[in-house]
Image 1 (cartoon, rainbow, N blue to C red):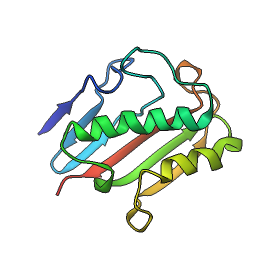
Image 2 (image 1 turned 180 degrees about the vertical axis):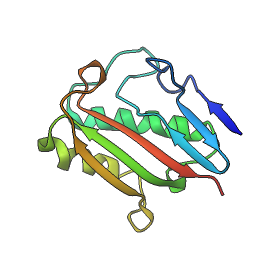
Image 3 (image 1 turned 120 degrees about the vertical axis):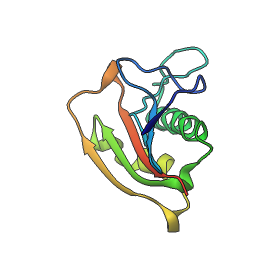
Image 4 (image 1 turned 90 degrees about the vertical axis):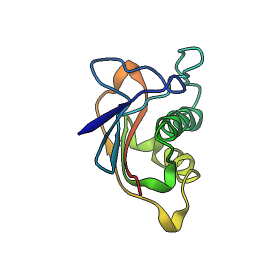
Length: 127
Protein backbone atom coordinates (compact mmCIF):
# COMPACT_ATOMS: atom_id res chain seq x y z
CA UNK A 1 0.00 0.00 0.00
CA UNK A 2 1.27 3.48 -0.77
CA UNK A 3 0.84 6.74 1.09
CA UNK A 4 0.85 10.13 -0.64
CA UNK A 5 2.72 13.14 0.77
CA UNK A 6 2.25 16.80 -0.14
CA UNK A 7 3.24 19.82 1.93
CA UNK A 8 2.59 23.51 1.46
CA UNK A 9 6.21 24.09 2.55
CA UNK A 10 7.35 22.91 -0.90
CA UNK A 11 6.07 23.91 -4.35
CA UNK A 12 2.86 22.31 -5.53
CA UNK A 13 3.32 19.71 -8.29
CA UNK A 14 3.31 21.10 -11.84
CA UNK A 15 1.39 18.13 -13.22
CA UNK A 16 -0.38 14.87 -12.35
CA UNK A 17 1.99 13.70 -9.63
CA UNK A 18 2.59 14.14 -5.89
CA UNK A 19 5.57 15.56 -4.04
CA UNK A 20 6.34 12.15 -2.55
CA UNK A 21 5.05 8.62 -2.19
CA UNK A 22 5.83 6.14 0.57
CA UNK A 23 5.65 2.42 -0.23
CA UNK A 24 6.50 0.18 2.70
CA UNK A 25 9.51 1.84 4.34
CA UNK A 26 10.70 3.48 1.09
CA UNK A 27 10.06 7.19 0.50
CA UNK A 28 10.30 8.52 -3.06
CA UNK A 29 10.36 12.25 -3.77
CA UNK A 30 9.42 13.75 -7.09
CA UNK A 31 11.99 16.00 -8.68
CA UNK A 32 12.17 19.41 -7.08
CA UNK A 33 13.12 22.62 -8.84
CA UNK A 34 13.89 26.04 -7.40
CA UNK A 35 10.38 27.39 -6.88
CA UNK A 36 10.03 29.35 -3.66
CA UNK A 37 6.85 27.91 -2.11
CA UNK A 38 6.12 31.14 -0.24
CA UNK A 39 5.66 33.27 -3.35
CA UNK A 40 5.72 30.83 -6.29
CA UNK A 41 8.70 32.56 -7.90
CA UNK A 42 11.69 30.77 -9.39
CA UNK A 43 15.04 31.33 -7.67
CA UNK A 44 17.43 31.65 -10.61
CA UNK A 45 19.80 34.48 -9.59
CA UNK A 46 22.77 32.09 -9.47
CA UNK A 47 23.28 28.33 -9.45
CA UNK A 48 24.17 28.15 -5.75
CA UNK A 49 20.98 29.93 -4.66
CA UNK A 50 18.99 27.85 -7.13
CA UNK A 51 20.45 24.61 -5.75
CA UNK A 52 19.89 25.76 -2.16
CA UNK A 53 16.18 26.37 -2.91
CA UNK A 54 15.91 22.89 -4.46
CA UNK A 55 17.49 21.35 -1.37
CA UNK A 56 15.24 23.35 0.97
CA UNK A 57 12.21 22.12 -1.01
CA UNK A 58 13.45 18.55 -0.68
CA UNK A 59 14.06 19.09 3.04
CA UNK A 60 10.42 20.17 3.43
CA UNK A 61 9.15 17.14 1.51
CA UNK A 62 11.30 14.79 3.62
CA UNK A 63 10.19 16.53 6.82
CA UNK A 64 6.55 15.96 5.84
CA UNK A 65 7.23 12.27 6.63
CA UNK A 66 9.24 13.13 9.77
CA UNK A 67 12.53 12.19 8.11
CA UNK A 68 15.55 14.16 6.92
CA UNK A 69 18.63 13.91 4.70
CA UNK A 70 20.12 11.21 6.96
CA UNK A 71 17.38 8.88 5.64
CA UNK A 72 18.27 9.47 1.97
CA UNK A 73 19.85 6.47 0.26
CA UNK A 74 19.82 7.70 -3.38
CA UNK A 75 19.73 11.03 -5.16
CA UNK A 76 19.33 11.85 -8.84
CA UNK A 77 20.55 15.23 -10.03
CA UNK A 78 19.66 16.58 -13.45
CA UNK A 79 21.53 19.67 -14.63
CA UNK A 80 21.45 21.75 -17.78
CA UNK A 81 25.24 22.30 -17.84
CA UNK A 82 28.14 20.33 -16.41
CA UNK A 83 29.87 23.68 -15.99
CA UNK A 84 27.64 24.14 -12.91
CA UNK A 85 28.62 20.77 -11.42
CA UNK A 86 31.11 22.07 -8.82
CA UNK A 87 28.80 24.79 -7.49
CA UNK A 88 25.82 22.41 -7.35
CA UNK A 89 27.95 19.77 -5.67
CA UNK A 90 29.18 22.25 -3.04
CA UNK A 91 25.65 23.26 -2.01
CA UNK A 92 24.26 19.72 -2.26
CA UNK A 93 27.12 18.35 -0.16
CA UNK A 94 26.51 20.87 2.62
CA UNK A 95 23.21 19.10 3.40
CA UNK A 96 24.83 15.72 4.06
CA UNK A 97 27.22 14.16 6.50
CA UNK A 98 29.91 13.09 4.02
CA UNK A 99 30.55 9.78 5.79
CA UNK A 100 26.85 8.90 5.44
CA UNK A 101 26.12 10.48 2.03
CA UNK A 102 23.70 8.65 -0.29
CA UNK A 103 24.44 7.05 -3.64
CA UNK A 104 23.96 9.50 -6.51
CA UNK A 105 24.14 10.21 -10.18
CA UNK A 106 24.38 13.55 -11.92
CA UNK A 107 23.21 13.78 -15.51
CA UNK A 108 23.33 16.67 -17.95
CA UNK A 109 20.04 17.04 -19.80
CA UNK A 110 18.92 19.15 -22.73
CA UNK A 111 16.13 20.98 -20.90
CA UNK A 112 14.39 21.06 -17.52
CA UNK A 113 10.91 22.27 -16.50
CA UNK A 114 10.38 26.04 -16.49
CA UNK A 115 13.89 26.57 -17.89
CA UNK A 116 15.62 25.82 -14.56
CA UNK A 117 19.23 24.67 -14.33
CA UNK A 118 18.92 21.89 -11.73
CA UNK A 119 16.32 19.34 -10.60
CA UNK A 120 16.88 16.79 -7.83
CA UNK A 121 14.88 13.77 -6.68
CA UNK A 122 15.59 11.44 -3.77
CA UNK A 123 14.82 8.03 -2.37
CA UNK A 124 14.86 7.64 1.41
CA UNK A 125 14.32 4.78 3.79
CA UNK A 126 12.25 5.07 6.94
CA UNK A 127 13.71 3.10 9.82
